[in-house]
Amino acid sequence: MPTEEPPMSLSSLVKAALLGMALTLAAAPPVLADPPAQRADQVGGWHRFKLGGFEVTALYDGYIDLDRKTLLNIEGKTVESLLRRMFVDYGKGMQTAVNAYLVHTGTRLVLVDAGTAKAFGPTLGFILANIKAAGYDPAQVDTVLLTHLHPDHAAGLLTADGTAAFPNAEVWAAKAEADFWLDEAIAAKAPQSAQVFFKMARDAVAPYKSAGRFHAFTGQVGLPAGIAAVDTHGHTPGHTSYLLTSQGQSLLVLGDLIHNHAVQFARPEAAFEYDSDKAQAVKTRKAVFADAARQKLWVAGAHLPFPGIGHIRAEGKAFAWVPLEYSPLRADR
Image (cartoon, rainbow, N blue to C red; front, side, top):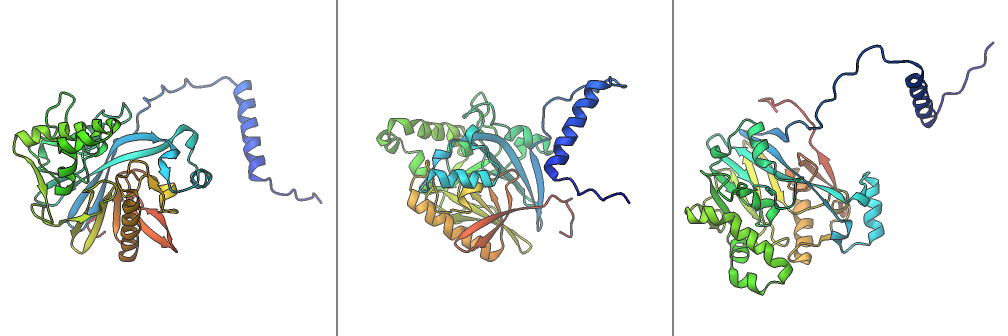
């Protein structure tokens, strides 16, 4: 009787497949002409999500590669280990998405954050194109809510020629945020390397201010029904997250409470180089993550892998990211 051969290991199968492919390509000419290669474009950078009676469209502005050394309060070897665990090639920089969220409430079209435009190079600045790809016109946006006034959230308020990208929108930011970034006296006292960020914030809101359509809010004054501001200062002095609630479902748009999913969920004490108040940013992240996990909220993050929507799961003193599952939009979900 023939002896039964042991099953091949996965690595052996891979090697055999690669060898077979090489021999086939070397020995046999193609029977059919090769199809023309398609352009190296991805699909449109938008993803629709149903939240009660709200329609939330995640918008991809692009990505930026961050140096792993921008993560602080944690040993470099630990950072590298956590990145490797998530298959992040940190040698090329940590690819970090920039996301924004378009919310159709039924009566309002609200954009939470506006992206970067081309403030940080050619890999960013696709919010306007993706709004159009998602079936909307930027002129239809009636409200822009800013989590904060850093350029990757506010510079997209402008077109390439410096005019308002959302010509019919009222733009809102927390008063503490506006008071800090738009004050020229505060900017003058800032380090020279930081002054450009103050100027970019002033420039971003300038056409809206001149038209009387930039507003600094306190509490919940002026915000659309179903959207509440949540004070999450630390990353910046007036950093604000937004809680969307419709028909008993809630989603918290985090803004910049997290910059790297591979590290800061597992080690929420890891601060970010550009946090204005690093200790407060860590404190805020831990508290909000714990609340979101306990309440089983949907959350959306500006720098989480696109579309950046999912849940946070508590794991002792650490947390884990549970991304949403792709599914068709259905009225009963």
